Image (tube, rainbow, N blue to C red; front, side, top):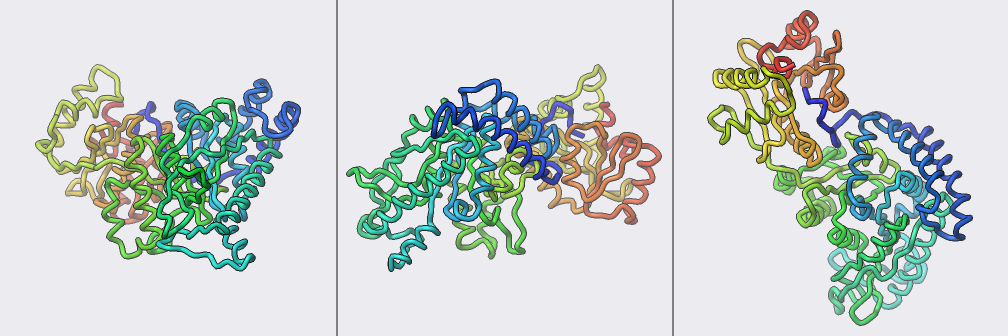
Length: 507
């Protein structure tokens, strides 16, 4: 269905992570680098100082990526992350609860990235620990409009705590052989409202130079959410706010919020795998379950992504699943993108540019007769009912033939996209739109299609015969509607859908 050149991002089969293999690879990697690190420095050595061993270590860890998902997924994501500058890879926000309860998971995930030559910028808070210390001191934590009131005593305790948590994180990473650098004074701020919140800051400046220099030298930068006020006084800043301002300054490919819950959940308590803000924001805001923290988080993420390149995305994920989120199509948490508005057409006359439609249909195929076949296919669409789904620039296109007299189930006739369409998640949005309109659907794919895992993720079931796969969702293989299609597929393979399957005709 999809051309071999297509690259899938985010939407594949959910393969189980091999934790044992991952642990062995990371243990081997950390052992080989740790001795060299300590020979160079008693604290946090730069990663670029020992290329032969590092190259071998990264090879081991790169192979381990395949144990998390598929080999194709691992290769594609490694290629994606290494095509952007190191400073634009990722910002990771770590809450105090993660540092307290999931430090080992966090550090293993950061070690994994470090050994691949990926250096995320980490900013952390310490809210739960601060509450505990304040209560021990007889101070009752106070909040106004969800923001901690920070008096002089609270600020002093917070400063000491943040430094201790920062050191604890760095020491643990250092023991694994991860080169880190603490960055102080990266945030400049003014008082948010001194009368109301006292020593709470509003970030007005992010000093990127020390962060970028650290990454260039092979260190993972570690920041606290404290800021420097205009008057030189230290100010407390919410870690989520600090991470967002850091992202606005660095414009990374990924912004990751580590969460104990591992994502956002809908009204039925099910984890939301992904959100396309352009399509779904208004719908989500109208849902009765979208309240309080969930509503605020979605709104804040939308405001952040509106300030970032369209290729940027936000992930809310548990630290133990970070590798799966970054290196598999299916991910593990909640992925949020700006997305694109999906257009629909039910007749050829609704397309503004027929030549563009032809070019999209033929773009991934070669052959002298391809143009003739596409022209005949378009002529066939003039006579039949269909629904086409595409984005404004037609990077992605899908065409569904509804059920009728000659077919008992709707069929997916066309599904084509560019690499950019995958990267911006348009194809995922298109398929979601199809599912809303067509609760039952069948389609066929060659067994050799390198994007086969994506189709397995989208289907409820499948049947393999002679190198071809019949996929379906919304029905059972033994259902009355599907039985004749199944029998035809067994006899005729992918030709079972006849003229409705453009790829079969082109191939």
